[in-house]
Image 1 (cartoon, rainbow, N blue to C red):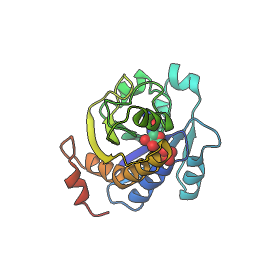
Image 2: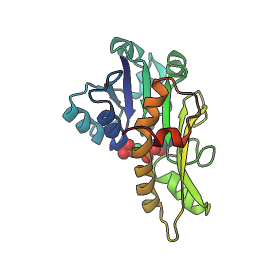
Image 3: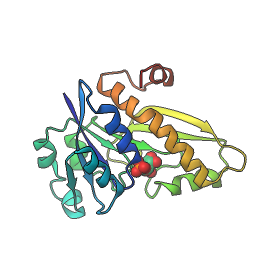
Length: 203
Ligand code: GAR
């Protein structure tokens, strides 16, 4: 059994979709939800699903042992960042190299880097008058939004598109693809994973 820890700071809609896909899965289980923000929606979602939660605090995460002992105690194999807004410290990157995935709500390398999260990203896409946006799922390394790409999918920017409407459409794209991409990655697919191979998977 491959054990996942999902790190999330906010509403947790991606975490919820991931939990749904792997409930009763033969080979993959969501074993832990890691959260840095008391009151975050993802905590209720974990509670309802009966998945253990770990609240982390900044000093120990950034400058201490990065909670690696807890992750090891839970037997975590792979870390999924699903709307997790702190930078992952080098110590954790090192301990889980090649085994930390992040989802970014734009087509990296555009609109990435420090401060580029949530609505900031969609505002930047609209301000630049891009003709398309999308999602990037990538490995995490020591630099923001920098590791090798695992998967990208895009959508056209529609006439009259606003950051809010784009955010809704990007969320839909994330929910459609992120759980399936995680599954393919964990089951050993060649990367980057192409869209058609995800679309042909059973939901
Ligand atoms: C998602 O859109 C994710 O791509 C984004 O935060 C949102 C979390 O939504 N992540 C980043 O911006 C990271 N730079 P959720 O809590 O509903 O899953």
